Image 1 (cartoon, rainbow, N blue to C red):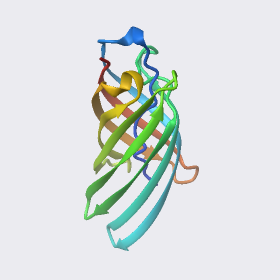
Image 2: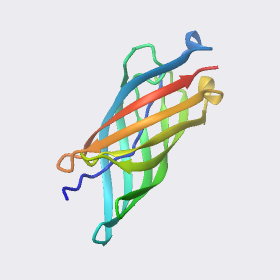
Image 3: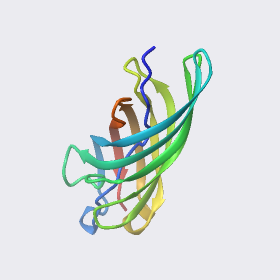
Image 4: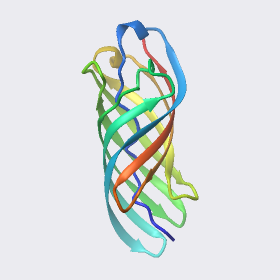
Length: 160
């Protein structure tokens, strides 16, 4: 099996301003950056990965989306055993206005390309992110040669 270093460095650094208050954003996007993983082979078809990713940019379908223009770290751990995937982590991002946002990601599977798939949820932050609600899904694939990843996401984010 071709093994890809997986990143769950999910999601986003967000650029939310007061003009976005009371708006729900429901659209896809893509995050890119660099990921490193430490793979511990347990047995044939069983491994545990420690993942650390740094988002360089999140680009959403619309430039006004509060998650557009992202950067920040994500980290976590994933276990793959007999085709089952379990694990998760946390991300701490800074949006374009300098506000912080925290989200949690849960690994739920792996697709045929080797991309880690799952869901993510906002859990708070500073400024407008303190009361923001939302989450979505992700599919994150890392090139094992370069460490570069592409994380395709869906989002449903409501700014208070």
